[in-house]
Image (tube, rainbow, N blue to C red; front, side, top):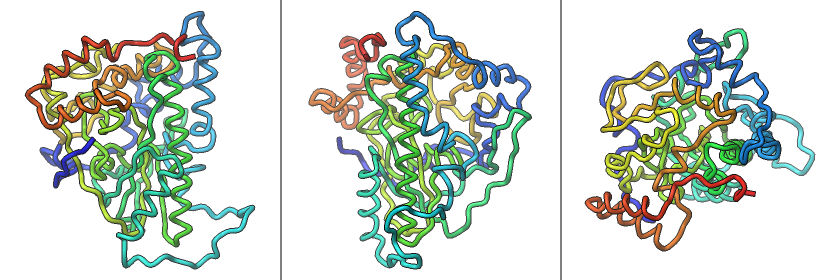
Length: 384
């Protein structure tokens, strides 16, 4: 579908003074140092999860989850502090095949000629969506955090000034797997997304290095992915705290590359998400842990895992992650039930166009989504 270009990216959500976010306060890191959530370290990160005789939770379901996460967990570590494995900031190992001679550099005087090559390479390596933006350093973490059972370690994060551009990459999650949320196939869809993030950005970063420039590939580390993706024109912020894209809704995983290669920025976009979220509330009503807010957006954080100074729907990660531990996997119900989470199709595309251009019909579109039964949980048996 087409989207309207707008002047402001993620800055449109700022309504006060903001400082760079400390990665230590991200909810997945707090069980390693915050006494209030120390039990989650054992329950979520250390305990094994015995298979259950239930669809979506038996041995082959859990084996699928572990396999889907394998590249991320063992070779990328994009949920940690960055600069590890596939997400290494530099790659100087020997090659076992013919390689570009060192010292060559593509001229930077014409970024309008270079940018299409980067986008084509990103798609070739597996990106579902890719966009470019100037790097807004407010989205960089103030400190990186390395998980450790003894409390972890923080370190001031410094990204050299020549890194002035960011490449946002979105990887589609499997529609059928997400449809089983919160059962294991949805977690497998998440894990596969993370593994594909590492694969895609690792290769794209190496392509940029081959052109003679520096590249820092990132998963969840180093910087906030959602505002970079908004600045790069991939989508809008939504009630569920996620990026909603025109083609896949919130059913994507986000990565990024920071680089000194001059690029042509994409325009931020709007296509009706904010207005639709104002009246929808399906994700909040269906959230198993009641971690998503009803009502209008606001500027008051729930806790230290929220960002101050932004006017959005602040999720409560302090109740979200404990449900994941209780569930024995993760969740993704808020992705499953989102009306924007639809595969391409004539009817779906017409509704998306209507949401963008005819917002006064949003309640009718929402009613139709309910009548058609979209967003209902599918049995994991159907996934297989």
